Length: 378
Image 1: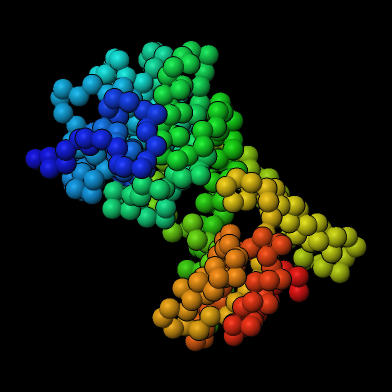
Image 2 (image 1 turned 120 degrees about the vertical axis):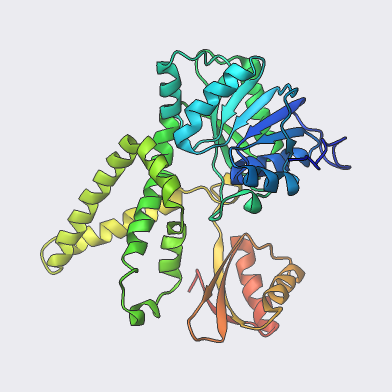
């Protein structure tokens, strides 16, 4: 295999200088590994790639995520971006092969590889586990993006042996790709992602599984609610078997609690007229409202936005026109969600804006002929 991608000769004009220096070696050229490569190369960092799959590696190199690793490379930082079931093995190999490099990984479970390496007696002085909270429904080098990590949390798991200089190196990696480093212990990380990532995957898959044998007429009534709650169900089973198995304890704890909650509301709905049944249903919905309110908003802030729903004809250029006219009105679009009704010749655009801009947005759009289907003040 001939490498046609040379090392970057310098950072692109106008960009802030990278915090990292030297060569970064990325083991695993899939979505995360290749995306890290793209982001670092855009800043002029020398990135070398290796992957167990020659085809995946060639694709990542051809797309510009880095150059092929060479025997004389001397990386200062190694990023292990491989499936969870081989993460510990690859970390150990990289630590032994490159005794001067700091090694991190981006696996979505942190405690199991750490415990495995400890049990083997591996010197972990130069290892710092980490995990960027970013991804896409599609994997592989072909889906990699340089902006994948911008504004996203990047958990860094230090321990009592971690040197300050090594910690700074891994945090520099996160900052250079646009992420926000956040320190946690492996235990804290795994409990957190069980709640915010792993259990939602199970719940979405279970709900979507009920659709597999549903009648066609029922599916024609599917709206944005079912699409939102099942979006992540289109995930790779082979990957999630590894993730859930590696973080089984925290996941089971939350699933057991959910099972109890489901049992309680099921009992209430079996006799909805019984004393206290309506209160149980109402409390379930209210607790959901409270939980949603605690989720960080845009850029991790707790600021809340107002929404308006605009009807859009299903013709070319309508969404661009809507955005352009909102810009003319001085309204910034904080978030956008599109809904298409089956068989209808229009869609609904739910647009989130600053509360102070809501009235002006509604009035201005109506004056320009847009149909407003609703807003949060209705």
